[in-house]
Length: 336
Image (cartoon, rainbow, N blue to C red):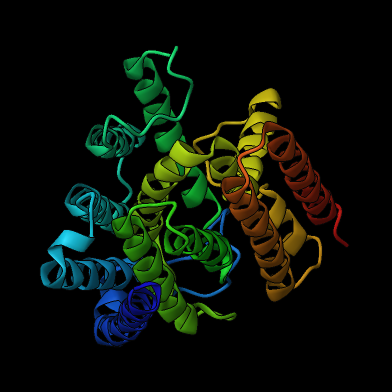
């Protein structure tokens, strides 16, 4: 049974990768005309480059997940309909923002609505915090955390292969947890189709990139990952923290540093750790390779934490993951 599911999931991932590649090839002329990223204060690229590949990524995920669930409707619960439809809504919002800047208030409203939809779709028996914490309070914290995570993923989509380096280890780790029986089948399906789609996108985003993900992709990708992490948190909160630790650390520390310095957090910048590393001399592939290796290490820690429910081990893994993340941030920030 496990072999059959593994074969199906691998086929779904391969189909998602192939479909993403095909869709990018078909849509790139249109994206070049209407969704072009011009260099600005935040950019790490020097020439105008088409963006909006998130359209292909999310269409591939939606198509493959829909086909698999139509063929095996009893094997993929809970339903992916809420997260996929909401993710497509964020794809549309991101496309508008890529084409012409959408105001921050409208962006936040769209993100908050998307987060609310997926939080409300999570089954009530999925609890992240102790039962003594009221469900409404827990869901409220998850809602706020989801909105922040969407923005964190968006903030770190600033150099070639960066989002790929973050997403591939996370989705791979979530897929492993599902194949081991710790997560619902639908979560495994979503993880592997997103993994495949990002690999397909990586073909075109390799440095120097010929196309970017754009807000069109970073926002819905962040939403899909957040949805998966909620289920991971339901089995082990430490695992859910470890998977995205680099993404959250870089985004949160950078935001805090800018607030303390009195800088506007709404203006474009290049002060994230990974961006500073490029400015200070590291080549883009060197930066993304480091982030990818850390992501794999954090995924191993997360899977270990989920498989061995021990508070002591969770603490050890969390400290180890935090130390590894801090070390990379320091090295990126001091690169020469």
